Image 1 (spheres, helix red, strand yellow):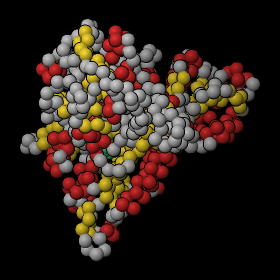
Image 2 (cartoon, helix red, strand yellow):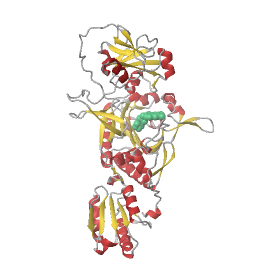
Image 3 (tube, rainbow, N blue to C red):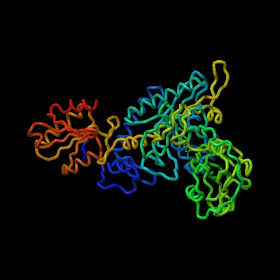
Image 4 (tube, protein in one colour):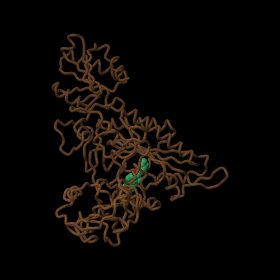
Length: 567
Ligand code: 9G3
C-alpha cells in the first residue's frame, strides 16, 4: 500500500482525552477515531490489526472444531425474559423498540440467542458435541466507558458456546478452548497469564481469565510465586489465619468523641491505634431498596463481588448519604453495628476473631471502643467478604501471595445447565431419555487484545507491533525524491509485495523527519530507509523498530533479509 492511497490521519500532538498509552497511540497513529463516548470507528490501519487478531482467532477456533456463525445484533426481549436476564441487567443492557413497539436489546453477549438456536435445531446426542463461535460487535451501555478500545460501549468480541451431552465431554470442550486461548494469545505476541476467575452470578464450576500483564490493567490478580496458583482478587479465596490473642479479656464498651474523623486513618491516629483494631461498617443498598451492613477489618478492603455472590444479587451499591443518615441517624463515616435496626449484618471472617475493637457509634463525631460481637450486637452471617491482597497466605503453598495488574482479554466459563434448563435446550440420549445440554461460553475482546498489545509494546516514539498483528511488516521510507531513490524504492516495493511481505510505502512529499516520526508512531516492525547517501555505497538501511538496530543491505538482498527477520 502507498501512504498517499491510504487514509492514515496521524496526529502530531497528544490527544487530551487519552488516559492510557494504547488509546493515545491508536488515536495518534490514525487507527481509530471516537464517534461518541465508548464508540469508535476503526480506520484502515486499525482495521488491519483487528483483522489480524481475528484471523489468528479463526484459525485456532477452526482447529478445535468450533464452527463460525454470525448471530444478530438485536436480541428479542422474550429470550432474555426466559432467562430472567431482561430484568436482571439494568441500564447496561441497551434496550430499544421496533415499529410495533416490540422490545429488543443490542446484543451484549449471545447465550440466549445461541441456546434458542440449539433447542430449535438439535434433537439427538448424535448431533453433539457442537461449539459455535462468532466474531461480532457487541454493545454494553457502560457507565464509564474509557481508555479507547479497552473499555468501549461498542466492542468487537469473539464469543463461543459449547454444547455437550455429559460433564466429561463438557470438560473436554472447556479444555480444548482453554488450550486454543493459550495458543491465540501466544501467537498474538502477548505476555499473559491464565488465572482462576470468579464465576460470578453466572454460576457454574470453572472459569479462567486470560490476563495480559500491564500496569494500567484494571484487574488485580494475586499469584503464588511458588505454585501455579493465580486468581483474580475478586475470586481469590482468603485463608484465615488463627486468631492471635485468644485470651485477651473483654473490656467494657465505651463511647469516645472522635470529632472530624471520617477515615479509618484519622480515627486510628486520634485513638492512637492501628487499623486492624478497627472494624468498618459499610452500608449497601440492594436492588430491592433494603440496606445491608458489611463489617470489614479496618486494614482490609471489602470485596463487593463476594458480597454480591453471597446475597445472590448483582447491583449492590454503597448507600448514599441520605440513606446512611436515615438508617443510622448519623452522617457517613460514623456507621457501626451497635443498635442498627432492621439491617442484616454480614461480617468478614477476620472480624469474627477480633476482640475489643473500634466501630462507629451511629452518632456524628463518635465511635465506640471495646466493641465485641455477640455481646454488643449480633452478626447474621460470617463469610469471606474481603479482597485478597499481597502478603496473604497462599491457599496452595506456604508462600505469601503477590499481586499484579492485568487486562482481561479472554474468559472461559463452564456454564453447566444454567441456560439449557431455563430455556429447555434438551437432547435425547441413546436410550431416548431427555437431558439438558451442558454448556460452556468463551469470550475474547478483539479490540482490547490489540490495545493490550500496544500497552506491552511501545516506546516514547510510538507503537512497536508484534509481527503477527502488525498492520504492515515493512515501512518503506524514501527520504529524497532523487531519481535514483525513487527507482530503487519502486523496485523494492514491487519485490517485497511479490514476496507477500505486507509493505507500506511512504510516497508522500514530506521531509525525512516527518516520515521517520510517522513510521515510528505507526510501528511496523521493520523500516527500510532509502537515501542518496546509502545508495552511493550501494546500500539501503534496514532498521528494526524495536531495537533501532540498522543493517546496511544491498537492494538485491533486501527481500531475503526482511524474510529472515520476519520468520
Ligand atoms: C448483559 C450485560 C452485560 C454483561 C452480560 C450480559 C457480562 C454478561 C458475562 C458474559 C459471559 C460470557 C460469552 C462470551 C464469554 C463471556 N456483562 N456478562 O453476560 F446483558 Cl448488559 O458475557 N459471554
